[in-house]
Length: 584
Image 1 (cartoon, one colour):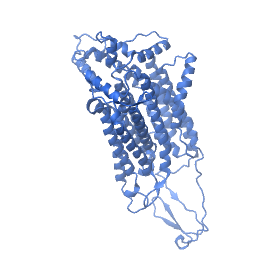
Image 2 (image 1 turned 180 degrees about the horizontal axis):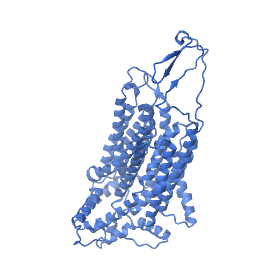
Image 3 (image 1 turned 135 degrees about the vertical axis):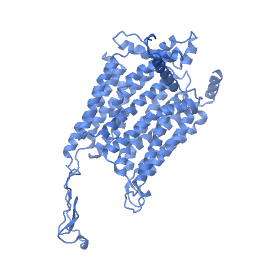
């Protein structure tokens, strides 16, 4: 241990700094900006690629989109295991970023229609090839982006020493800003790139460019990250705490099952059945984790609504007039407003706005956003033409003066309307253009209402939830709870898959109302769970199970500062009117 600390100190002394910050973190921040640009840029046009290039309908496009997002939030568990147990953070980020980059390049290639357009009519002749390539690309991207997700921020934190708490806090703020900046720019730029026309033989919507630019940014991200190699503080893998937690829980369940008869005395907590094999400190830490994970059970419903911004809401925008991008701009604006204005105002009003109550409000705001989306959808439906269903006869007319016009009736051979033959008369002076269907007059700007509500919900729910999870997590299990938090996002997208596949609701507005109703019901359940939750001080609980040692040694072993946790718990205690005791 001493050799490791000495090696870390020596490396730190040789690492250059700028304004009190390690220079290495600038490589990490730039890497994160480019990676988030790459991910959100590709994601911004993904559902449109499915619909307009591959040719899938809205439901299938939504299903594949949310399957991809779910995979992106399931793979962080794998990434954490690889980094902590095998490769270490640096190598895990590099290797998985290479996989990520290959996936982005494959996606860009899959969107080139000229590859299989042998007759040069602008339509790919082998759609199976393009579909298979895009699915392979998306799987590699999901493995790459999900795998590095739990590693990059933690690797940035590793670059600071214990006395650099303030600089470390500022780094995470800048890190979060780089995420939003990358998302904002990419969501603005890639739809513009897609709107361009490109192609060798025929000009089509330029999906290759819309996917190619994010692929290029991922290459830049990888190069920038590797360039800082000599300046990084890198620690060898310590063994994955997530695996230890799972083994401890598994042993407790197995041991309890083997001693299920009445002759064995009951224990205070079912995790106490692991005492025969695991130390009491680990068991106490697992209890704290399970207590927070229990609160996570209702959370996927929020993400089920939130991630439909990239699927259902995007498809809704395609039926409207104009070009309007809202969410990334609102995110950058609302985060500082909430932190510097709204929360301080609520505190001055002496309102007991605890973190769990904030999260409840965030869920209700997301439900309101879907109510707004449903009302807008009703207005859109009223302006849309009533096309016949597939079971009805469809007659196609072309109104030309003095021409012989072929007319097709579904289920019958084409026949001609008497008149002059069009092919024998090149004079088009008598052709009259008639617009039978008016364009949709509802502007895309009306979506700002639902996006504003959803963004407020995101800021209140997501940011607060991350802070709450970090403060309530044991010192060595913060990554475990982060993996649990990301898992709720994956489950939320799976919920959307189930609803989209069921497809029992005939109208889109009804589906929006269904999701809003479900989230309101889940919010009530979460509010009840939050009312009975007792805030913990992990530092104090862990200290009870440690041998009496000098305070500094305890703090190093725990890997956290007493100040941060005590400040959080004292704040919650002062706000909480109920006199509750900490229990494990």
